[in-house]
Image 1 (cartoon, rainbow over the protein chains, first blue to last red):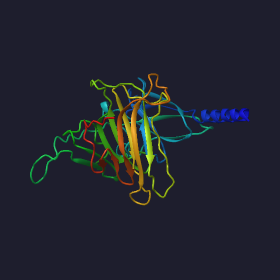
Image 2: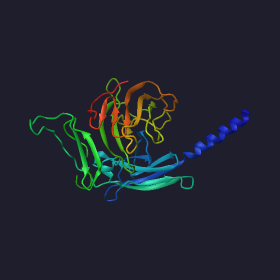
Image 3: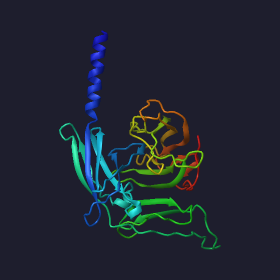
Length: 174
Length: 144
């Protein structure tokens, strides 16, 4: 009986290991097609997950990245490099839903993609948000931007520090 | 855990909204807790939507999760967009903890930050900051 259980556990362990052997590789490039070194890449399974941690993988000097041990499934691949003006495409406001999607399965255990970022985002500098009547500053004002052509694609954050220093605009009008 | 940004929006590639909060983890002496393995000792309760519970993912002490070179980490709590009835969701109690020195300790260690709140169909509460509309001000510190 004990042997049978051990065999079963071994089989389950092997099955579990086999499940997690997909690999996603790729290259992050800018709007001109040049590799974007130092871009931060992350993936999310293309299904509803109520809570998750974003795990970043940094692209090397050639813009290449490799994510191993990915369980079978369909994944959305996102990236950004804020320091260079390329906002992270976590939010559809920035990506315009133009994000690569790959499916890993036993017969397709690896995928190679090109992540094209850009053009660079602009910076919305809100040095202050004031009450139109009193002229007084409103601290912690919440600011929401929506893409003009797709109002459902929005982003909302707080002007808690008085100014945004990170890219806030994306392609298209807002 | 020092809040750096608190942003909500429609997530890419899916049809639900999410709230992404980025933190910088600092030691008590103010130095950055850079490249350290971390995990979440997390519990979920009270799920009350009509749809089957879609589940969650969280950081574990398996060598895969750590702060980056600047001591940063990002956590995403999603809204149950489209789930019914309106206002349904789940409660979350999330203790961020250090892993063992090798990062492979199966048991997380000491808590350095606790997040308590809930995710509902159209808002997310993290330590009393219900967004929308209330974002966590940058610089806010969440302790153990």
